[in-house]
Image 1 (cartoon, rainbow, N blue to C red):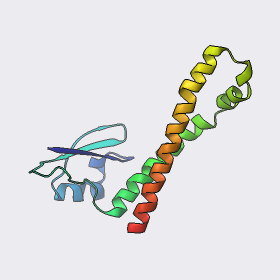
Image 2: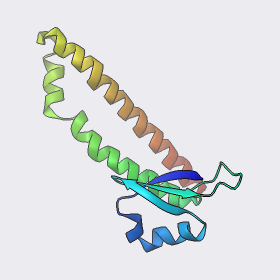
Image 3: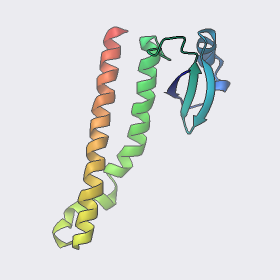
Image 4: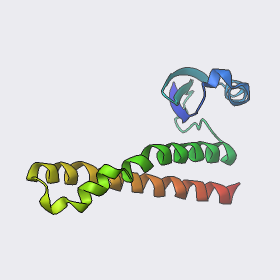
Length: 129
C-alpha cells in the first residue's frame, strides 16, 4: 500500500464531494488525527501516486494549511508575553534567556519558514491553475 494524507477541516467521510473522486480512483480512507486524514491505495508497483492531482485541490489544501498556521502562529508570535520578554531581555535571569533563545527564536524561525514555503506552493499552484 501507498499511504498519503490530507489536511481537511471536516471529517472526509461527511464530505461526499471530497470523498467521491478519491473512492473512484481507488483511495481508501484509513484514519484521522485532528484535521489530518490518512488514505491508502494499493501500490501495484507505483510509489509516486498522488492523493490530490488537480492543481485546484492542492491549492485548497495549502490555503487550509496557511489558515491553520495563521490561527496558531499569530497569537504565539504576537502575544504580550513575547513583547515583555523582548523588552526586558537585559534584566532577565540567565535561565529565562536560555529558554527564550532556545525555544521562542527557533520556533519563530520555523514558523516563518513554513509560512514562506506554503506561500510559495500557493503561488506556484495559482500559476498552474
